[in-house]
Image (tube, rainbow, N blue to C red):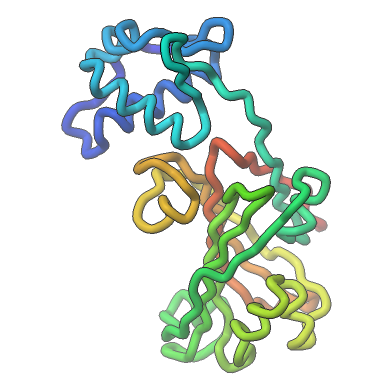
Length: 247
């Protein structure tokens, strides 16, 4: 790992940059010895920062579950197993976590109706400005938040979708109410970014924590798109795997 890679004036807080580099250093073994993080004084010298800034970075990583500080003993690496979340032709939240968590819970955080802009209208085959149902859903595994997803549906076709979802707590089960017994993934794109805004409290993250972002389009077996979604996964808790899509 290269030393002194902190960029001042980049717009990203120094403690956040240091936290990200410590995370990388933990992954490649350059900043940890026998399960312990290098001392604060050594980290401060490596990054050209004061101890207070390094301490803030470590505190953020502790909140995110990456490390655990023990008074008088140092900071230890937490070797927690990440959830493996498969992205394939039939991606389902509950089935993805089978065998990895004893309790899987989906909670509706917010539901509202907005007007479809040009991008939504084109994909869903609806008119510009047509009603669009938006659902924000928090996914948890054994009490830990592992995803925060936003889903969009045609408001005319799926009237009262949020009411039915509130009863089933399952997108798949709710879709059956509207005659969709099966659906497939048309496409998924994956990026990464720093978490910000209300997603920090929803996922229990420190400002600027890394989240994986999966944007997807679901369609019926006869290739009619009916759902768009954007799901955020905490990078320290979830790893995304890609299954082969059918030709």
